[in-house]
Image (tube, rainbow, N blue to C red; front, side, top):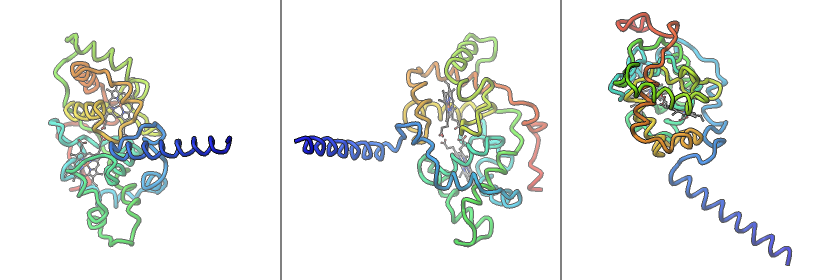
Length: 259
Ligand code: HEC
Ligand code: HEC
């Protein structure tokens, strides 16, 4: 009798496991924080490899078609700034896009092995593609940032600025830091200096479950944000100051590696 009960409950547990697996395969979204950023695969491999700067420059040419040679993206938010982003964040995002854990139909074809191999003059099997991921992300991470990122409409004089600041302090500092500096070791993106329009889209997608690789704790933290709250907090975020040492000297700066 005891044995029967046991096998029944383990059957149930087994069935539940299947339902869970099917559900997360359907939405593709991690339910658990440990699944959001599981160790292993290309990400972990690329993090261990020593990047090569010259190869990074060559591979980055593919990326510059959209992210620009300076890595600055654009104020209209179509293309994010990737200059100055933390290396581990870039590795995770690129690996997620390549593995289709984050939908990016515009970029996906350019991020495939055949593109990054061809750009750097290798044939399949001649180099580990994770090495090229390490090279190109290390290169992007050290590019100086755009001194004139896209910002929301409310400057310090508006009450919406102050409300956004309060929302930021109560809900975001814990992960993205006081000044939006993020955390390389924890894969928390740097959001200071990022374009307002890009961040609005990502924030909305994260809140509404459309960005499948999002951190579940962030989703939980912002699920009750109204559209106005979102505008106010991202307005504030877009106005966080980037330390001078991380910025390019002027808006007219051109990347000297492509002279
Ligand atoms: C055809 C245009 C295009 C090309 C080429 C391209 N990207 Fe992108 N990339 C995008 C778009 C569009 C997004 C933002 C997608 C979104 O809104 O979710 C993006 C997002 C990213 C992100 C995520 C940024 C973040 O803040 O989370 C990274 C990292 C990235 N690209 C790296 C690269 C690298 C490295 C290359 C070259 C190997 C590259 N991209 C080539 C269009 C492109
Ligand atoms: C529990 C930690 C956590 C909290 C709290 C949190 N975030 Fe995030 N946020 C993350 C992580 C991790 C990512 C990247 C997720 C991924 O890997 O795709 C992210 C991504 C983002 C992005 C997209 C960045 C990019 O480059 O694409 C924006 C914008 C953002 N967060 C803004 C905010 C704001 C504003 C708040 C507060 C209202 C907030 N976050 C609260 C952890 C957090």
